[in-house]
Amino acid sequence: MRRLYTVMWCLALPLVLLRLWWRGRKEPGYRQHWRERLGFYGARGGATPTLWVHAVSVGETRAAEPLVDALLLAYPDSRIVLTHMTPTGRATGRALFARHGERLVQAYLPYDIPFMVRRFIGHFAPRICILMETEVWPNLIAACGTQVPVALVNARLSERSLRRGQRFGTLMTNAARALALVAAQTEADAARVRSLGAPKVEVTGSIKFDVLVPESALATGAWLRSRIGARPVLLCASTREGEEALILDACAALWTLPGQPLLVIVPRHPQRFDEVAAMAAARGLALQRRSDLGEAGVDRASQVLLGDSMGEMFAYFSACDLAFIGGSLLPLGGQNLIEACAVGKPVLIGPHTFNFALVTEEAIAAGAAVRVADDKELVFMVEKLLVDDAARSAMGAHALAFANEHRGATARTVGLLRHIIF
Image (tube, rainbow, N blue to C red; front, side, top):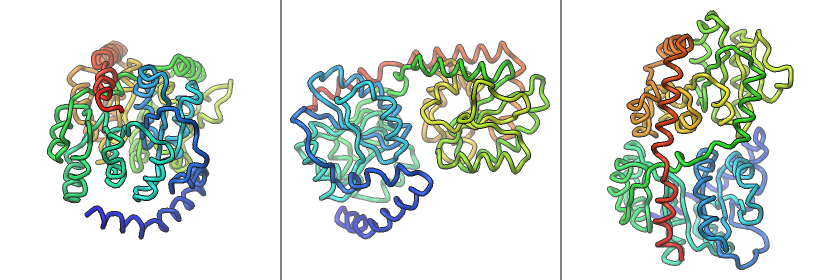
């Protein structure tokens, strides 16, 4: 099965590289460092012991922050090689970890073709491979063999992903059996990973609860709020394709409310910023961009502020009165609500949250979040909460308490990793 998988990768490689070049038209980062994706990394560095952490894109990179910090503290003579698959993930890592200097090296993970992966391992000689959340690459795991233990941490596996994995038969079960450690977010995640054959699975909780809100992000949030003024602010964070149109249409009633609320939309993928701006323009809505925002601030006539900046999600949460978490109005699985809770903001979430099922249900049970059935109920709840300061304040307090109560996953994960790092 793995041979067939490798043949399919080799046959698809020309198309994959063509797609890389094509995406580079809008995102130049896809045309940079392309040799790394084939396993070429230039001259080797020194003999510093290396820990390898793979965080595919923005969300995983941000989630990895407390783990990276803890590992560098626990292993002061080591460095970390942090790999990604997307330029936005790499840019996020560069912003988050610049303070570590030469102790953290960034690179793209090569495509999952055996000789490319072996070149990566030979170049960096890692003592461990730590995969974040859902990244399971059969050839990578096989290439690590017995020399480089592989751990899947902050692991989550939905029922949908489990069914998809089971369709690949021995390809995924053999990969799961070769994992030295799985640190799962929840008991349900752990049970699903065990069903694939992983031999050592522990429940540690979500590392995302341990992410500290940077003071600089709070300062940016305060500056942003001062540019907005006293008007109520609804943030729609990490929205996905198809959701913005629903939100823009449904929110037409909001601008008739007292105070003329401001709708802030932050699409999850930066290549869609222009698309969302065009949607607002087609509806005759007055829109400003975060990237164009100067000291003059948000015009009183503006109805929509487009969050077209990277790495400022904490600032957007800090500046809002109420946060809706995207990816959940349509069957996309939802995005993570922990960051909103960490800054004490009341949260609204749609019906589709299978990617973060347990944490969403726990947040709702804690009074930190409210689930809405569709775009119409979303606007109904927004109208209700924006005029009820006491209810919003209570939800925000519950959200902050919820986030604080769930800290500690990073320490538990590092404790488990100590037993398998060579």
